Length: 70
Image 1 (cartoon, rainbow, N blue to C red):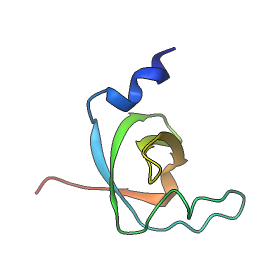
Image 2 (cartoon, helix red, strand yellow):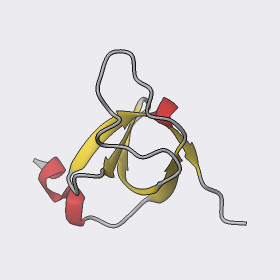
Image 3 (cartoon, one colour):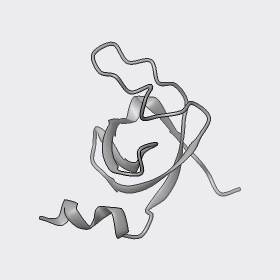
C-alpha cells in the first residue's frame, strides 16, 4: 500500500492552483487559487498533493499549472 507513504515521500515538483471551480466535486474547501502545492505522486490525469487539510488528496490536473525553475 504505497499510497500510505506519500505524505512523507519527497516532493516531485511544485504546482500552482489556477482555479477551484468544479462542476461535479467540491474542491474549493481543499484548494486555494494562487497557492503553490507540493506534488507527491502523479498519474496521467491526477496530481496527488498535500491539500489545505494537510492530507494527501488527488485532484485533476486541470486545476493547476506547473511551475518552472527559471
